[in-house]
Image 1: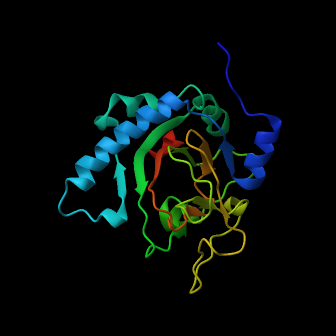
Image 2 (image 1 turned 135 degrees about the horizontal axis):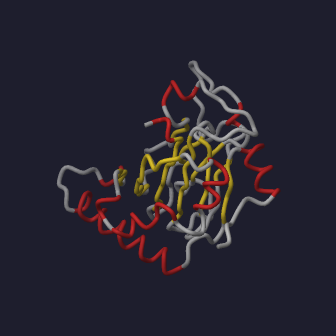
Length: 218
């Protein structure tokens, strides 16, 4: 069996920037299948729900019971070996999430770190295993800024997240709005400053997020 491991360039980028962008990770067929499952959930939980606010899109977690397709993504062969190479073998899946970022000019986006204020104060070195990583699978093309782009601050995983009256936003210097195509994926550390830009386009941005953390978290 051949294992796909990080190239030296990827290893350096992970240590320096705190994330990797993996173009064309999913095939067109996989994108179509996953989009169909996500759209089914959107119709059920948003379009057919009289209490749902469509401008808020959808943020659905605990996806695995919803479809065998989501279960199969737990250890996707195109990326799971990289997860093991980054985080080591003592890990568990802690979250699977479907996101629909609907067009909404009133929504300004947000930037955060994962794990809340406790994990925010824990930063690992460039050479250690991360406490937690996420894979975000992009199911729609996002080729212009302010279209609901996944936004992050390269290198911020090694810096304290600012606390105080001046919030970090998608327009704070250093922010990068990723331009991606359907089928691309991003892998990122829990401690990198990240979030979503406003979606000023006319179409929703659709993604899946799978989260893995060290088994000791259990």
